[in-house]
Amino acid sequence: MSFEQGLSGLNAASRNLDVIGNNVANASTVGFKSADAIFADVYANSLQAASSVGAGIGTSVVAVQQQFVQGTISTTSNPLDVAINGNGFFRMDTAGDITYSRNGQFHLDKDGFIVNATGARVTGYGVDASGQLVASAPGPLQVSASQLQANATTDASIGLNLDATKPVVTGTFDPTDATTYTSSTSMAVYDSLGNSHTLATYYAKTGPNAWAVYGTFDGAALPASLGTLTFKTDGTLDTTATTLPFNVSTAVTTGATTPFAFTLDYGNATQFGSSFSVDTLSQDGYTAGLLSGYSIADDGTIAGQYSNGQTRTLGQIALARFTNLNGLQPIGNNMWRESSESGQPIIGEPGSSNFGVVQSGAVEESNVDLTNQLVEMITAQRVYQANAQTIKTEDQMMNTLVNLR
Image 1: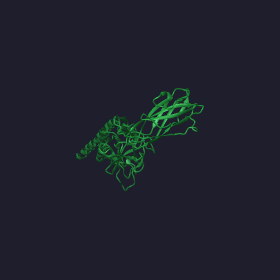
Image 2: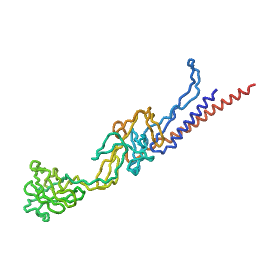
Image 3: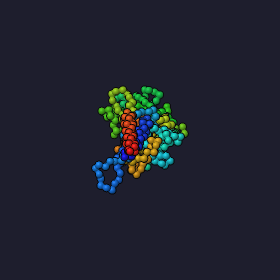
Image 4: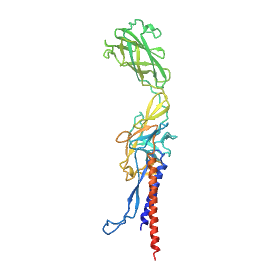
């Protein structure tokens, strides 16, 4: 009799509707992966030889298989929202319990850890005392809000062009007398406490292709010439006749390290028959700064921006991938856990070793195709009705048999 086949069909169709309903319910769930019900026919075991005319006893759902295809990436206004474009999962830590997710809706908790809505912490690689990434075992990522300490200027450089058409200066240098020098410029330098000081440099032409360099520090003239710049006949710096870099040393009264000493390089200086111009001013010092923002690069590197204009690496998000994605165990909250079927996770940096890249200020939408799911729902409904009709027909046949006289 066909009751068993029809009943199995009803159960399978109902399970299929469960899967479709779950897909539809999660159509707006970030990082959700749709699933399909996998069916198989059922035959009774028999010790007799297989028969070509034997009928099966129905169907069953042998697996609910998730489809790990890429979802659409949409942008958000949160820089800590992160989408994975390609292979990989975020590795999450909940009090030592490691899970994996494609949902990159993150924020900072009260301790500065990057967490998701359930409080699970994103793991990755931290930095050492010098700010260099330490790519060892991944751990929870923490964005330090501590102040970036001041850094004293140790190296400065000026790129400029000195006007070769200017006449030779004959008077003794006096920063208050513009006739004793040809051109000047200034730049900021920082002492060990981050205090800003103004270094002004003055250039006096002393002969063909020769220029003396003088300086003032916070308006006070430095005691001697900083050095001499000598140029070749083609306007480029004669590095043989010019000793670089120049050494600058002066006392400070701000409580910082004194004397305040640093080098001044003119390796890019030129002397052409055009007006005086400054191309570059650079130095490596800065004042203290507070964390004002952060960004995440394609390779998962988290960079902090500080109020003093500096940028520092704060860590790097790590990704995990698996040999058998369908071996992962779904545990809810957009999370999966590894299993014996999935294999052990392979951990690495975004953009390397077959890992996808990450995108800051974006999330990966659910990969549910609503149009397809609605069509599948209609089909499942018809299958359910057809199996119910099989049972109804069998019942009518049984009724006929029972009523035989």
